[in-house]
Image (cartoon, rainbow, N blue to C red):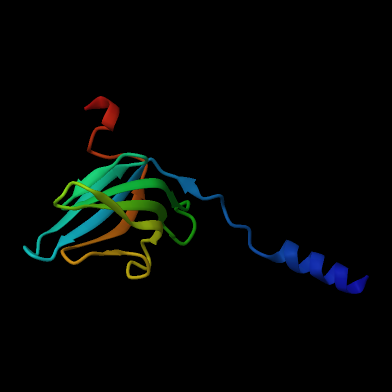
Amino acid sequence: MASCLALAVAVSAAPAHAQAISNPVAVFTGLDKITGRITIFDVYIDETVQFGSLQLTPRVCYSRPQTEAQSVSAFVQVDEVSLQATMERVFSGWMFADSPALNAIDNAVYDVWLIDCRQTSDVPPPDQR
């Protein structure tokens, strides 16, 4: 009984974490290794954008409230378009802005990694273009 009471006290003393914030925009950085050009681009959730031969589609992008340590993550699907116009899924998983090397897209020509999630963008949403 005492161990149950101690566990209950320990759990109630643990810091509460705020709910993750779901954002409508994921922000990526892309590197073209041939030209050395770095591009920062916004992508709306469930929108597919082309970066070189890669097509990126973020499915969710989470951040935390400003009152907490920032942790930005997104679930992203990436397809590569070949010269024969076929597509192959080269990545489907979580990207973490604070650990870009963990799940960055490392292609022979292009690197892509998540840098942020946002509530707004200067780029109009796909349905307003």
